[in-house]
Length: 368
Ligand code: NAD
Image 1 (spheres, rainbow, N blue to C red):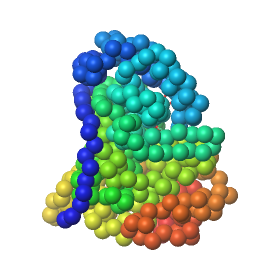
Image 2 (tube, rainbow, N blue to C red):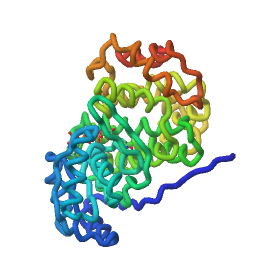
Image 3 (tube, rainbow, N blue to C red):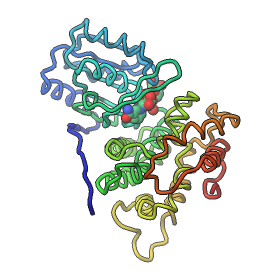
Image 4 (tube, rainbow, N blue to C red):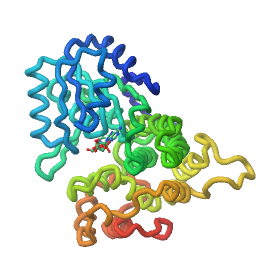
């Protein structure tokens, strides 16, 4: 075994119903005197319920998906002119993304309180869009200093969004197995993330108010993002980045739809990843199934397909506005960004086949 692994400096406070108390003590630790509380209009009431004991100088609800530059500029000006010293973001990846855009130019510390499973809070990746062009970058300044996880804040996330967002986290886990900086530490996080998502998401679907299911999904969201932050973007993320940016497809649903096709393509060429993912779907993170056990999926792909069916998850890119006419163009746009370390060589024809299958929602087990 030979690898170099960076562990990112971050504090994680996890506790259902504990966000207000944790936020108060963590803001105190950072010496916060003038907090900018950032939340989308729909989530500002959640933010207000946990911010009563911190010194809020400014409430900011101008949040837009994919962080358009003009939205980022307005937020940066508001932060500077109000002399804020700590950013507190409460919301999904779009809200965390806006806090990161402010931190990128001001260096202000972020306390992130995520309310979806997108995982942006555990990465140093920022993203901005200008017109139809999305730019991303890596900067340690944007990595939140503290993450506060409280599953009670995710209860209101609608089931469909919970499923799509949970599969977005699952995609971080699966792609971390073969991304350019994949290593055994990332793989351990990712496998445990898959196990926890497979345990938690069916409970959320059966009962959106099931706290145990929500906690499993949120815990997995952190593991998935920590693995992804270290492993980098693999084939799956390169494909989804182009689809999201060029065709304005919804982030979580695109990841949820494309993932089985990437797993079908790469799995046979990545036996170690295949074994670990299948084990995780069997509920065991580090080993195989019990000897003689007939329970659980035979392969990683069987596990994913069965989970997606149980969750009634997003199935076809055609349902999200991706057109058949765009397949060839998208394949050409993705090809240059395919990581050279991908376990299997990728041609434009492979990408066209993958995108066609994902567009139609055909059975991934027969796609290649
Ligand atoms: P989002 O933040 O846009 O939220 C999706 C919807 O869910 C919104 O309508 C929001 O108002 C609603 N919502 C959020 N929390 C809720 C709650 N608790 N109850 C009810 N409704 C709630 O979407 P997302 O999928 O969380 O994040 C997507 C964005 O995050 C994309 O822009 C993506 O590029 C970015 N992202 C970045 C990274 C990174 O590392 N930088 C990682 C993952 C995602």
